[in-house]
Length: 139
Image (cartoon, rainbow, N blue to C red; front, side):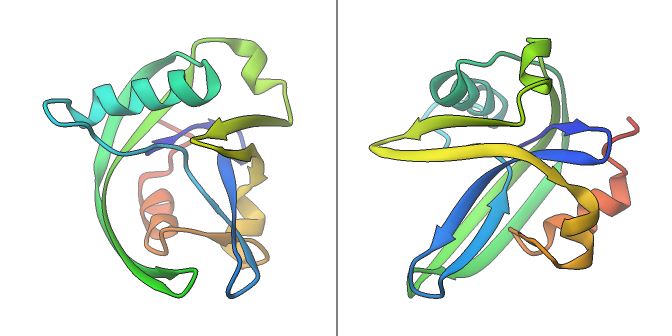
């Protein structure tokens, strides 16, 4: 997953759980293919989904997340990176629509304050604590 900030906002993908009817937000990223590093996977996923190149990629750490989605138990191991868009135009767009497989999704700039206050849900749950600990907007 890649954390990209614009001051007090994070660039996040919007998700929706049809069972709980909950809207949530999470950093963009994806699976690591066999023989691929997590950093290379991050770059590939951003290229595939947003046609966006990344720079200033810095490894922040590993998170383990156990959660339910659509009534099914899920488990993921996340390699988390701080990064930046190469194209400055992506910082000017309030939201971007992209395809993830056969599903249309939206990524947008989300207020860190709304995430910290709980007004908006950020997943994985332990990500907010890591963001606050590392102060991602100030490398």
